[in-house]
Length: 68
Ligand SMILES: [Zn+2]
Image (cartoon, rainbow, N blue to C red; front, side):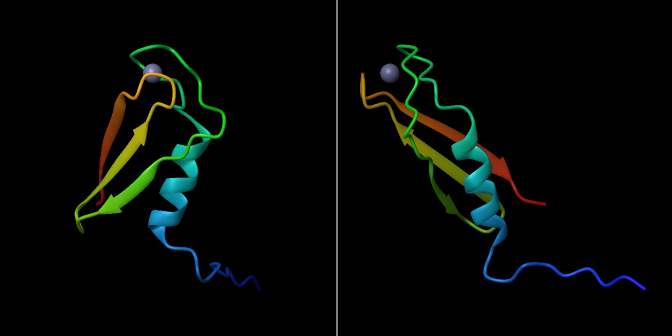
C-alpha cells in the first residue's frame, strides 16, 4: 500500500519560479551572470510571464510560459 502525498502550500507558480531561478541567469545582452538574480513571475491564468533586470546593463529579460 502506498499513498502519495503532495506538499501543500506550494503552488505551481512557486515551483515554476524556483525552476527559473535555478537557471538562465546570464544576460543575453552583456553576458553578465547574476548569481543572486531572481525572476519575478506573474500569471494571467493561461500563461506565466517572467521578468528579470540585468544589474550590470539594465537589460530586461522576459520569458513566457504557457500553462496547460
Ligand atoms: Zn546585461
